[in-house]
Amino acid sequence: MTASARDRATGPTTGTGPVANKEWAGLPERAAGLVELLRRNAARTEQDRRVAEENIAALDEAGLFGITRPERLGGPQASIRTLVEVSSELGRGCGSTAWITSLTNVSGWLIGLYPERTQREVYEADPRARACSALPPQGTSKAADGGQIISGRWRFVSGCLHAGWALLGTPVTGASGEQLDQGLALVPMDRLTIEDSWHVAGMCGTGSNTLVAEGVFVPAHRILSVTKARRGEYPTEFTDEALYRAAFVPTLALSLAGPLLGLARGGLELVLASLAEGRGISHTLYEEAREAPATQTQLAEAAQLIDTATLHLMRAADDVDNWAASGRCMPLPDRARVRMDVATLVRRSREALEILLTVQGARGFADGNPLQRIWRDLGTGSRHAMINPAIAAEIYGRALLGIEEQITPLI
Image (tube, rainbow, N blue to C red; front, side, top):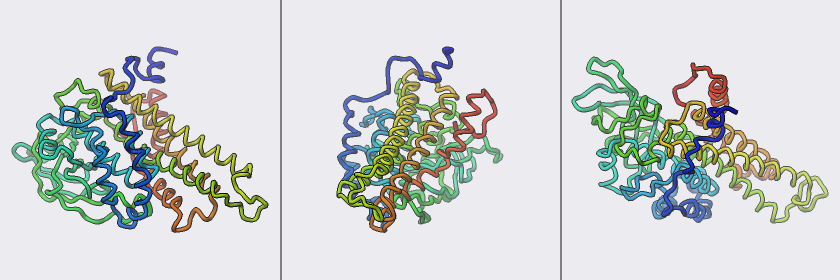
């Protein structure tokens, strides 16, 4: 194996391992401690189409919305590995809660990429400020003295019901109206309106509604160049902070993955608990389903699929952390592999849950059975465009073959 191939297989050999702040090493354990609360509130979160306020308060108190906030501004500045571990724990209890927690944290990570002036505008007014984000440039803009004036509608903005700031994808235009760049504009939520548009089959509680801006001025220091960010060029002055050197698109993709793994893990736990109650298998002589070889082998297969998903997710997170710690830009083949690792998690998690539904039988689809909500949440969340398995496979295959022309700049 050549040195370059070895690097692509194992990541950089920096000897540092994933970035982590030891003072905040208990964050995944804090998340695990909230799982039962989230489970109790999951049906209400779905019914209300927003995360229960009791959940929000508990997450805030545990510091789980500020995982990616800079340490110099009072945050833990934890690793990407920690982010996915926390969200996969929370997903065991409630997919919607885990989803908005993870996306709130990745929005906080995005804020850490901006200049110090911007970061202080957010956190000095409110050290626990939360943000939401919509990367696609769905709005319009026109040049103004010292910035841009943006208008438009941004769909599917998860967590907007609990945020004070929004990061909105927008074109950056010149004086003549020509597009100069693609940007990410940081806007206070009080300058926006929320349109109630999130009526869906799964992840109902994420409140992923539409944000509307009408002639909102955004100063230049609050517009991040997405074009440069994809190349690992961030305007933060604190270049020694490894977390804010993490690869742009891989980090965004990983933020979607943890909650999905958590849903699969929660499904397995639910089925195991149901089997422990001693129910039988209808139309058979098995008085206890747990005694049937079919049940045993299916559970083993589902658990192994979840283990496979976990291994791919943690490898991808560690790769991102290690490249960031090395101070080198993560190469395209490695970034493509992260997209593929996340796609593998999506496929294996779906497959595991299908098996678990078969073990549970038709009762798993009863309105009062949490398994059907987990199934709908996983089915919906795993269809996010950023983690489409077929697209990820094409991206990774082209990278492996050394084909320079790719199908998307989001790698």
